[in-house]
Length: 75
Image (cartoon, rainbow, N blue to C red; front, side, top):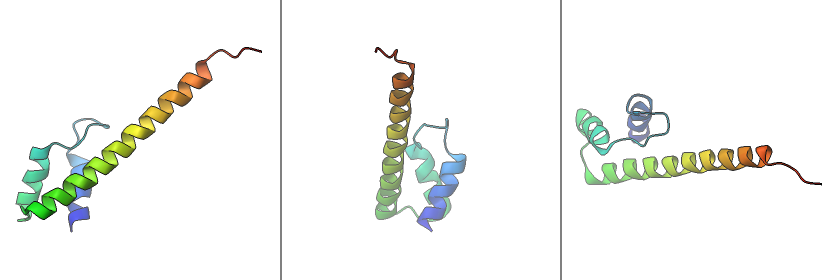
């Protein structure tokens, strides 16, 4: 059930494509399902933190790859 809640938040709760979910949005949805429990909140926050960090890493890798492509080659 928690993954279902996170997927709904992922689809509807982002203010921008790469922005993390807001705590207020997560708490509101947990309350909507009657799931305002500290352990569920912590797990949902952990999911979001791991995925956000992964996405940020991908963005950084793309930036570095693009910079390498644009860098003039000597030789």
